[in-house]
Structure formats: structure tokens, C-alpha cells
Image (tube, each protein chain N blue to C red):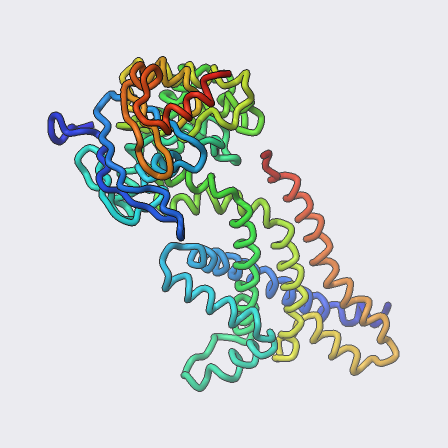
Length: 216
Length: 251
């Protein structure tokens, strides 16, 4: 245990990096995914096509490839992110947004079509009907699948370790290399770090789920 | 509520055609509805009567022909269509109350979001309307906590809150338990008495006799007969209408 407390600074900052990667990417992915799903269900064919194209590209590209592209490919078009952390957040957000979009779309499909019809019959335009009637109900039914997306995202942050972002997995590599005899302790510490993020999330998701459940 | 031309019908459908794939659901429909008129549309299942009702606020787009409300042609899509729909109240067979909003919020939503009324005004008016349809004490409940009959009366209040020029009822009692049908029909009858322009698709012949100015009988996507209720029920002209009436009125 001596060794863990010796390295507590590294572990703590690595934990915070992982947590902020997950939270920042989660928020961005939620916003982008919501915009995408709005486009995907809109009555405007070019918007629908664009969103579908986006989802298919990012859902079917390995996350590591997305990281590679943002870290090494973008320089060819003279683009550069301000830091490695931001680049990692961008990669995670772009990738996860595709999954958020599809989770939300399943929720939208689960809202009875009569709800949108009633909204339109009252004189709400497409955007208003989506924002005030359809999406609030869709969000409630997608809490469990969005929870899955969030937990997957929290673990996907580990790919950033391969791109010189010092997150928990990078800390694992570094500490394991120099303390081979303490390998199990290092593993335990890092796994606990991930669990500290994902387990409370699972509880929170379950709580939100019962809180927002709607009567039908 | 500005009337554009005196004597102009409030709703005019001319030469309306609609297909669902191979199925010709509306065939050359001509129909005019005057201000204050109550038109009941009846007919067998699949005759196109619900579709007809839903074309009037363009929940169903039509393939050809023209529909005008208060002298204004139905716009294709977008803001203009939304504005026009705000003037047309609609009551659905399955109520379609917003499940995540309270009864009161269901009724205030249109006035606040579409008419931009102050929330307090909209709530005062909503409570009046809910009292009028007899569900004032349910204002803070969610739709699923209400009976079908109560939900449908809330749906009527929701439509009335927009001060519509015309109200469309698409089989408003077909999803209700028999003992709840009358509480909804009573509200509709009193609306008719108050001079609301109404298009009602229904199987309730009693309501048609009691409240309608005109009965429109549809079959196979066409309007087969159109007459005042007394004439239609006692002396139908077409064989199809005679056959239909003999089946439903004998028991």
C-alpha cells in the first residue's frame, strides 16, 4: 500500500482526467446526438440524409481510427485542436453522438404517433412539437439505453491513453512498467477508479429511471 | 376570427382525391361547411370518413383537389400550415393527451406556445374550459389517472382553448366504454347548441339525429348522400345508405 500512496498524486490526477474526459464528451455527445436525431426524424430529406450518413460513418468506424484521424489526419487539412485533451474529447464526442442519436431515435419511435399528431393539430410547428412533446417523452424511455452509452463512453476514454493523454489507463501502463512486483495493486487501483465512475452512474440511472417514468 | 367574405363557407373541399398506395381512399370529394353548421359523417369502416376528417387540417396530405378554410387555401407545410391548424380544433379517437403533462398543462400548452398568451391568462381560461366540460377537479392530474371519458373531455377543452373556427371530431367515442359515451356526447351537443362549427365522424346515430344539421354518408371513398338528419334517417335515397341503416338501426 506504501507504493499506492507514493503514487497517489499520479493516480488522482489520472482519475480526474478520465472523469473529465467522460463528462465533457458525454455532454457534447448528448447535445450533438440530440441535434442529429432532430435532423434524422425531420421532414427535410437533405437533413435526414446528412444525419444518417453521419451516424453510419461514426457508428461503424472503430473509435481508435477516429482518434487516429483527429490526432494525425487533421493536420493535412490545416486543423489543429488546442490540446491533446480537447482532441480526445472531440473524438469521443463525435463517436458517441452517433450512439446517442440512435438511442434517442428508438425512444422517439416508442412515443405514440398520436402525441406528435395532437401537437401539430394544435398548431405547433415541427421543432416545437419535437422539443415540447416528443423529445421529453423520448428521453424518459431512453434512460436505460443512454445509460449504456454513458458507461461505454466512460470506458472508451481509455483509448486516449494511447494518444499521450494521462488518464487512468495511461497511469496503469506507467506504474505497471516500473513496479512489476506491485502489478495486482496497480490493477486494483485503476479498476477501482473506473468503478468509481461507472457504478454510481448505474445507480443514478436507475434512480432517474424510476423518477421520470411516465404513466400511460 | 375575421370573416373574409360574407356568405363564404367556412370549410370548402373541392375535387379532393387521395390514394394510400393502390387504394383510392378519397374520390372526387366536394363538401362545403357553413359557419355554425354541424356536419356528421357516417359510413362503414374503410369508407374514408376518418381520412376525410384528417385532410381538413392536413394531418393527411391530399393528392389533388383543393381544401380551403375561411377562404384560405391550406398551405403545403411549414409555419403557414401550423398557423392554420391553430384555428382548427381536433379531437381524436384515442384522445392523444400529452402523457407527460398534467391536464391543466395539456390545455394551456397551445395558447402559451402557439398563441403566445401569458401563462396566467391561459390557466384561468383553461380552468373555465375544464369546468365547462366537467373535469375541473382533475386539473392537476396526469392523463393516465383519468377515465377515458374524462380524458376525451379534456381533449375537447384542449381544442377549445385555441378558440378554433371549426372543430373536427374523429370518432371521439369509439374508444370509450359504453357508460362513458354519453358524458362526451353531452359536451359535444352543448357545443353544437352554442353555435360551434363541427365536423363529426361517428357511429352515434343518436347524436347525429339530435345535434347535426346535415348528415354526410360515405362509402368506398365517395360521398354517397348528404341530407338533413330527418330526411336521411327516414328516407335515405341510395341503396347503400338504406342497407347501412337497416344494419345499424335494427338493434
